[in-house]
Length: 458
Image 1 (cartoon, rainbow, N blue to C red):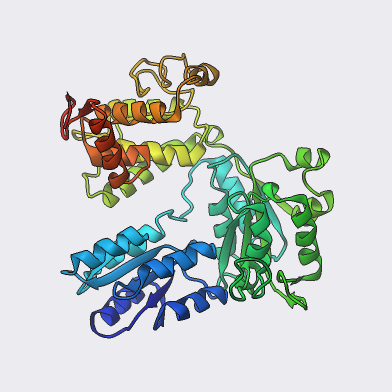
Image 2: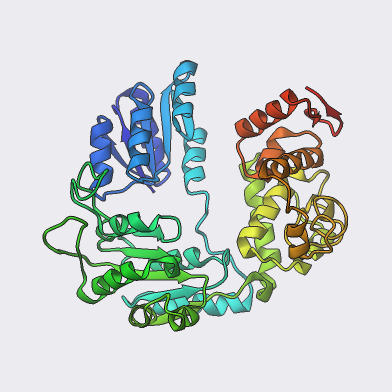
């Protein structure tokens, strides 16, 4: 991973830098915020930014946010300076690293940044055949289109192709075409010159130039506007890009991988995706099977996630019971591997005893196993018999705030008042959960007391 340190490398910071390099990080250091912004704009990129808490953390994060730089930021400083640590977290830093540095903490921070572990884990023959095909085409420079339902692992396959390619020493850059507003995606891909549009305070290289010599993944390319598709087609044909506001084209050497969870043949027929771009991208197509069609991977991935989340959360590494495995095997997994991963994360936190039993398996969606729904009604879906339409109909007429409140309270009851576990299940920070609970208490509502399943107003 690429680590950018903003501040001096004297003393303890230099020691932290060496620890990071020992863990495989490539470390770059700049003196201040202006230099950091210039470095990031110049397409050199970073997977993590560490900034001295004595600098203006708020200005760095605000500047990165304004220019859509999504790199996570952590602050570091003397461990006794608690006020500075609080200010950094409030400014948006993900974490505070106290000095002198602890090797395990440095390792944990680096691991957290790369937590979406890009390891390819599989056992089912259907997935094995797909991986072999991916490895066969990896050494070529041809474009590859990777299709499949959401959560099947399309980006992981793309990264695997890059690792097995002749460009493996170059950068792998991923752009989520669905997550960037249409009017900003062109600048994100091709870069812009200073003053090209309102907010373009300096020249910035785009993802094509950042990935030069390596691989660029266009994630969910089917979400790209047709006008921009025409510009992308020209890039693929001419191997050059035009920065927004630029006066001359810039040559690039990039291999293109693209993913889509849609039927692109249908998108072409209905005029939402250019046919010429489709054929330009579709030199090789890899269609990832959904998890329900690769049953051999369910046990294998479940064991992998159980070990990983036990280590991450410092809880006992418990094996899955056979009853729990039966529930997992019988589920439909509409969210595929991503849904399985979240299910195992919850199970690891909720399990007690020597095994992860069926009581720790909380399934979502319409195909939950008996007794595993959050309301314990045997439907896995809140008393609707597993019918998504019925589930949605039950929410009509209620405000979002009311639904959110009931979900938070019910989850807290399920975790017997454990705030940390509830926040993890809900996918929110513990701070956000506590603020919500304080609001409910102030409104006179009963919330489960910490560590119990009983309701109290405290």
